[in-house]
Image (cartoon, rainbow, N blue to C red; front, side, top):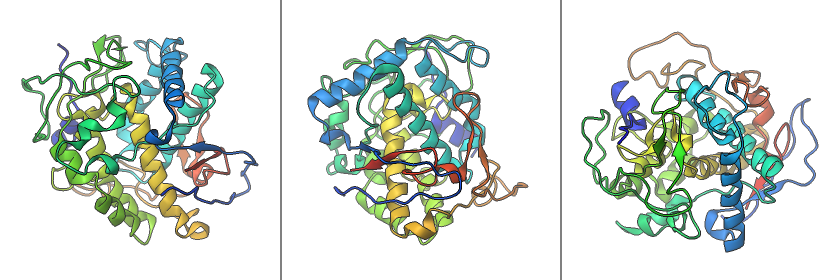
Length: 353
């Protein structure tokens, strides 16, 4: 069985219910007259859930368009995963972490619609609703084998994959039910972009999910007065005690051996997009608390692990600005942070329910 060097490995080694309003911004803003509406997964009908999963399978069946950069990519779906692999060391623990992922998820959503005939919008997963008891995460509708993404993998002993130990991990093997139980992924682990067939694994840890994916942790982030402090709360740190809801979503579902816990190759698990859509939903909610000001509020370093993420000592860096270009590695046209600050203007056109 392929052993994954995971999201936790890199960290360890590197030691409601209403549509939010918005306004267009900047000279590059485009008209957004009919924004598509993103909904929480459990608010979709059974038919809508099926349509979304069918569209993912469609994208997984289309040929890669990035073979020159990703020789192992087996599909257009893996072009997205591969773009994330190529970009990982430049898009985490930096000031453009949230803008870059906002644009990536929106591009994925766009291709599900344009290439695969999907009529809906990218759903998000409000995981806070699934951490009420010590076992409720396993009953989340996202893990339903018939109307969701399938559940956990069987328990597998971690034979030496390094990283932060994840207490309470319960799986690690190949996902055994649901629409992606036979999914073959070709990219990863870590930075591998050559063909390396392996299955989709999950390794759920209720101890992690129930510690960091709570409504109180979300409220703490939303209470921050500016983007700099909000972003620190979203991205968190690289130790068990400092992981917050971004890393906690990856590690709570991926544990030590799950694909979504691989900081490079995590988009191989389709749940990646629901998790990051929720991160984007929360950023938009935070923006909406003072929209005029926060459409222009961005901060943080252009260099990974520079201040305020300088966990290993000081590094030279510059602060990102609205003019900072988001490098998409040829997946889609590059844009600036300023272009994606407003989800109903610039290059984006969606809203949240």
